[in-house]
Image 1 (tube, rainbow, N blue to C red):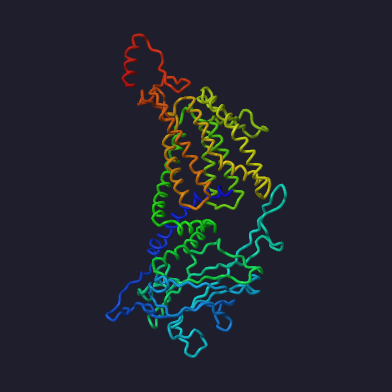
Image 2: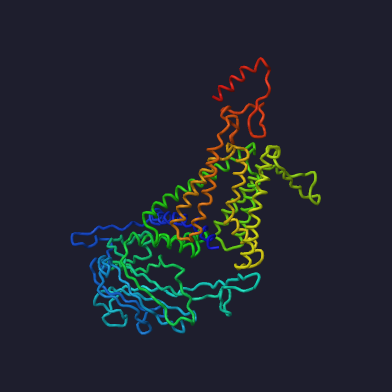
Length: 596
């Protein structure tokens, strides 16, 4: 099961990373261009002050300030009902070289008492105040000056609907998921995240007053038109928080760990993080399903743990992977659309591929899956059904309707397949294959039934088939190898499509060593490579016969097309019709010339 999950992560992680970089560019560069607002400028006079009609930062570079972090159950900040969590003094605007590591970063770890209110789905707000040196944070103090205090607040307890696991062992009725007996599906449960990152935006640009400000700064820049200044941006960066780090808050916890990190942030990274929030809003507006927390964690871990150079190379390779995937799809459709003879092709493999795709669709629909994924697999099923009409004669028989009303569906083998040795080889290959697959299927079904949990017998059937196909489905490529061996030819194969798929397989191998996953799955990624290398070996061993027709209806002896009166023998070779004695010599001479 872990290997299966890793395989799904392997296919989606890099596409998600590419999609996020694309949306970042759109949110930062494209969308702001449609707004009327002007971007900030750096126009100042000789004294360093903003020009008339432009607002500057209230705290210039070098301004010293202190940082206070308070915890409170109230959204409104009051010192009387708040608890000081951390105090950091002598910070400076635009200072990137202070801190223990000389990188502007300050880290502090502490524990928050888990009160009875928190243990019973209570709320905890974090109030963060940046106070210019000498300023007062208490609004009731006589010397309090609003210009000296920047205050933001954030609800730090996270509330999510409880998802009760309904899977059980179908034989024993037991489950490994321990749930509170009082918990119900959909109940709101509070969680706690142990990390908080606070940043002060290092940006001294001036903004035009009286005009709209471009996103994402429009939500953060508030201009005081009397003083022509704006407050500095105090920002809580929660992008790198992993959902897997969330802690369930209940009466078993006496304290809650909290690591506070302060580090300045540049406008570039500020726009990137805000673009991610804008992406969620646009997805909601467009009705696009959001990625799950698990998928987001995979993307974030990959970006955090992967070497930047390897990450950059892999992203470029991912673009190539997408191109190859499209070309493989295009050539696959083109191959079957123009295919006239099924000589040398495994029709039973096509039928099994349709069954495999049907299992995938049913499995996806039985589980909570992204809508776009469900649509893509359904399109794949439609394509597999279309292939059936190309490899078999599918007709509606109106002469013998079912129940006298419904046309009877008739499916027959095409003559080019039924009257050739390919059908016999195909049947023989699946006979030998069944000797291997049947014990594996029975063994995996027993394992899944005894050691895994399922929602019901229907889910067990789908899950068992889906997992079996992912682990052993590569074996279904071997019947074509057997047919190639018996026919001593590979001229009938769609080599363009196979080449593109092989290149994608090699790229998947690269992903397998970049993404964190079990070692057994990494080894399993080379299964398809072995099959393709066997194909290459067969291509090298079985030289193409100049009189054997390829998938485009031509051969080396007849590059302009096979004559209409030519005949195709059991092995796919072209035989010209008998000619008169007086015409025999010129014809032989012509054939020998073309063969040369």
